Image (cartoon, rainbow, N blue to C red):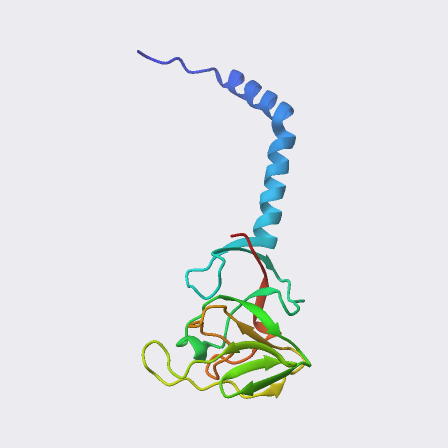
Length: 171
């Protein structure tokens, strides 16, 4: 069975009618997708470091406080020279005092986390040194005992300039 082709004038007439009736919807969808794509993006947590698996990253939002989740790139030396994005919880910020008793960390006296002596592969892990955090320094952590985060000297504190945005957990 052959199908008849519409005359070009019919096609253009139908297209103009469609644009006249639904053009504003297409424009709104385009604007929303552009805004969302430039300002927000989804990130999947593939490790057990946090209880959440899916985050929305608010790009460019570097004004974070204790209790917020943040997306960032750690120093390349901390991750074998690779460029990786991590999501962790900010638990100690600029001007706060980070102390350590044995391998347990405290921020202004509040217990944060404990550093392990050895990595899962058996390599020794040096704990971060106690200090007053600088103007743009943050101590970030995962909630899992095996999380690789600021409790370890090789990972270190995270400077604000390394933030790519604030992370909002979805589930």
